[in-house]
Image (cartoon, rainbow, N blue to C red; front, side, top):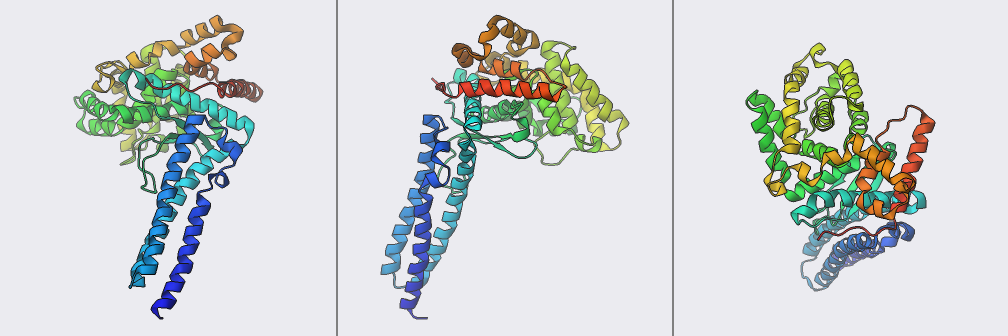
Length: 418
């Protein structure tokens, strides 16, 4: 094949990929304009700017390669560069499509308004923890997806395209839990703990609390610090309400809920639920809806009646739950400016008694007051999700009430970090 024939073939291939890059730049084909419009202005601009910066850089690479192709005396070098451009395109495309899919979920006006309300809640949760520390709160983008558990793609991490950092905290809420979206607060604590550096400090504290009993258990509990931090933050911000939603997600056969998975940052399900119950007992007292949950889980998955090393880990950890719960929320941390978590987010404000009092004082204005929406959004979310209906019709009515309130949050301006 002559150099000129090879050059013609490369021109054709390069034209294909430059055309694909140009199509990618039309973000309104990735997600509909009405879906983009459902985002808060600052969030929309920040996200689109980040995506366009990667696409623009990719287009510039294509322009340079076109010049190289015409001037190079060795077309094979241009072909190697073209293959690199193709790989870069696929990485940028993956990033654009991922965010586009998340935004596109907002095409339906009702769901879009609910998700926008959840964006507001997510920012409020992060602000509660980060503002007192002088750390800027990133915008949040919530999106629904299938599956059991929620997830977060943290702001500030490098994305697939390697063109920059994630501009937002993108939080997956599972569809089954749109009726009880308290996992949102767990995921936002992941983001906040990452930004303030709490995870590493908590890891050391957990080791110091557990090591006097067992070095092996200390290794395990310290390895779960990131998830324990997120659970503790969710409790401090929303009280009891996240606990039943967590239990619904992590329950399973007894062997599964006791399983210790090497390398898994999550504690075994039984220990995780029982630690969350201990948070409630530590702050709200022995009796409450958490006691029914604990009794049910003890009866279903009693580690003393189960066989194997994993169940032994659970049984040996039971006496440690109270000191671990205390260390998570009441102990001062450098990450919090020498204060405990409870100084940033006081669990007493989301106790069942405090939430009932909020409902009594607010009365009919609870779900309509703009002032309450902006000052008490997390407590209202906790109140609206604190009851566990036994009747499907009652559950549907509760979900409608929650979603109506979330949709009314949507037009309100999001707070900014000082």
